Length: 248
Image 1 (cartoon, helix red, strand yellow):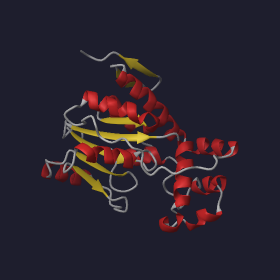
Image 2 (cartoon, rainbow, N blue to C red):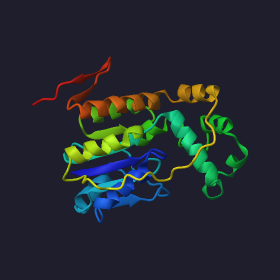
Image 3 (cartoon, one colour):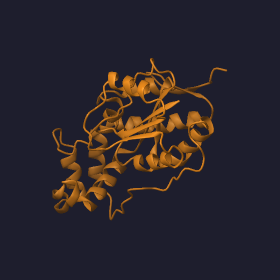
Image 4 (cartoon, helix red, strand yellow):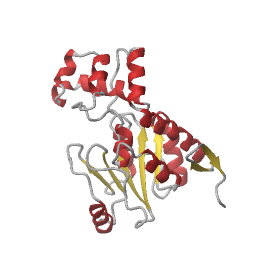
């Protein structure tokens, strides 16, 4: 199996990458988040055919890596991503960037509060491109790609987990794919920043209003993990999400 991890910023991507390093040394290809070239299908084919020793590809979803991959051509290819409640993700980003504002080119954060920042970040042409419907866009390569992600999940081609249940997701991977994910990898949380306060109720409402697809994807990710842990196949039906028995 070959795995491609789309790292959604502030969704335990660095933690997951270091978990992979612990047992996959020499088999992990990491693309620096400042590498702004998104891989084409032809480039994925070249890498998958040319680097047979690489078992894990990981990169920031705002740069090189999405889960829009040539699954049909490579049956052993799987995508993986962690997602987060958009409100929690916004808060985490704010305090992380505020701590690193001097080096992250977001110096205006030093003079803005969380509520003000959220309003700036959610403007249609905001320089803070990591918000809005970023989680869906980062995984699918398209802000309207929720249905496509659901198809990949239902087909078992992409695994999308809620970051709040990181430990459960890791245990599932280790139990189901023991040849790829070995017990014992570090799950120590990384890039964690303390927060002094949360957003106002008005800001929470604004974030939820502007991120309906990300909210839905986060909800689905919980149901998806539940279904996997229960040993059933996930059915992302158009009219209703339901669990169906796995084929024997």
